Length: 210
Image 1 (cartoon, rainbow, N blue to C red):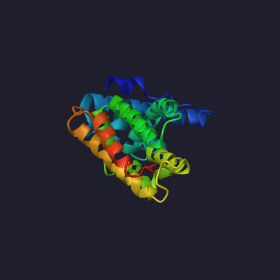
Image 2: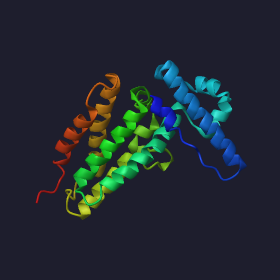
Image 3: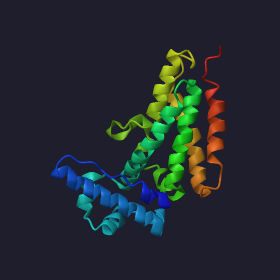
Image 4: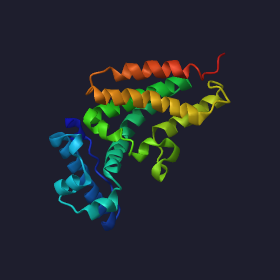
């Protein structure tokens, strides 16, 4: 959990209004991390985040929509670093391997955040998990997977008439299920190998056999 503090984003800004919003976000992110480290994820609430940050709930809702929104923002920022590493690894490799590699880096990101932090992310109320109706048209992991799949079809590596939305759902179930139980068992399962094995088995069913 100490790594959470190391990766709290320094939020860029261009003018005074953006500077105020950036400072507010910064304080709220720091408060969120402090609460999780001190009290655990079960105590996390908008009210306690605001009290810890010394800000009003009005200030909170000016920059975030919910406590899940804070968590999503943090993870999105942290993931950029891992995504860059995945992109470097994924040059000139088959589509299935690209997908498996991306999720291995994703899991590294999630493990850095810690199982308590991720327990708050894997909530049915978190709109970011609904890839069919993502808020703010966010482009995150499954959207990147869709790009890989379409590129794979063009390269004749992936079956051309698959239902890509159904494939994304299957992949989400594999990864989310494994990560959920990683949280349940407090990080004590080999989630990387579980995800990779199950992804490999599933992806083999949509590969175009040559």
